[in-house]
Amino acid sequence: AELKHAGYDAIIVAGKAEKPVYLWIHDGEASIRDASHLWGKNTKETQETIRTELGDSLIRVAAIGPAGENLVRVACIINDLKDAAGRGGMGAVMGSKNLKAIAVRGHKGPEVAEPERLKELRQWVLAHRELWASFAELGTGAAMEAYIATGNIPVRNFLDGEFPEIGEISAQAVRDKIRIKMEGCYACPVRCKKVVKVDEPYSVDPAYGGPEYETLAAIGCNCGVSDLKAIAKGNELCGSYSLDTISTGDIVAFAMECYENGLLTTK
Image 1: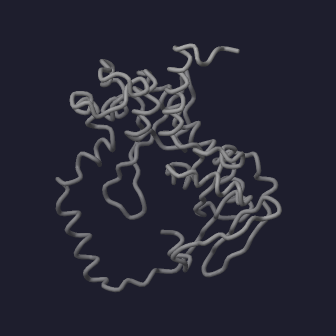
Image 2: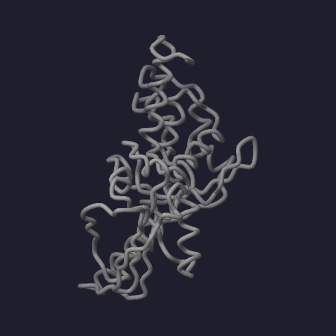
């Protein structure tokens, strides 16, 4: 949305920079800036540094962390610290181009082909809250117990179908134990994004949002983990390093099974 306000519909990045850089886009202008001082920083450090040096706390940032820089195949692009463009290794693609981040700020109102029709659709969505009320209350992951009953959730590297502790890592448990608020994507009334905070035994920074269903499942029951705070910490670390939570959880689950079968050892 910020990109649209800045006057652009899309970005195509061709080639590779000779050294780390970030792309700065604002109100119809684009420039390439040195990012050598950002290389090696996590996504939050990167976002804070860019906002400080450009003097605007409302700049939106899509960045990679160390995983993208090191071309990890399951690296993703982290937007605003809480949303990931994952499942395709796009963070590694940015890293291969020495592109640390894309920073955007726009003040232009986008042109709308049918503004009245858009208003009608908006009002229809608001008038039919029953269609999305559960997402506003819990976000994703509210049906995990039903998924266990239907065999539609990964457990211990997809080996098992039962996980008695599933209620301890559901969206309801997140709400009751570690959630501090709900947020949403740009201009969306649903606000289904969890924001969590943990002080002990792990410190979990709410700047990284909270675990969605896929994360609760991949880092949780697929690894045999029922500790909700540990899952939240895993979600934060993945966001910080720009790792895909689904692939990361599945890789850990696979490594655990390999260890159990003697294929991996402590050596």
